[in-house]
Image (tube, rainbow, N blue to C red; front, top):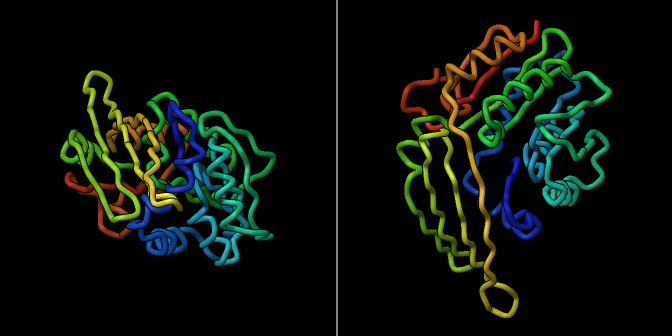
Length: 248
């Protein structure tokens, strides 16, 4: 996950996996593995890897993964999760401006990575990914859809499981197609007191048409859009769009 918090990300990274507990990473990874050429794909580039949940699953499938994230604290959590996995390399890089002295057989970016980029940054990211791929390589990534933001994200949500309590407030700005999110977490510590963690993020709303256009401009072919990590085609009311494109 690419974060643009105004405060320290250290504490948030410690509860990120709790926040993402409902994500079916096994399903997502199975989709990715089924879409790439398993016999030829050896090296995978993972952008905005977060705490390395998908990285770990791909490594368990014997892929060599070069994963990067902008947040050093997220990478620290990934190091803890991955241990000394010989097939994984973790780097501290920016999605919008990265250069790795290597070429890859596939690239992925999960958990709304491109929703943290504006249109120009998305274009730069796609071009950078294209330049790091071998021919006949797949690029697979997801994003939260316009429908999801406009139907679900202009509201306030409250969650409480006894150990962690949070209030999630969203405010949409249609003038620049952004959603500003503020999450106040209250986490129970060892002394049974609650510690407050504040997280502020901005996400950009992108249309699937714009994403496909930018992929084409970067040189990608055979672009397909799916409803979440399934073989169902993307529809107007899909909450998560998953794109699969090929560098010929």
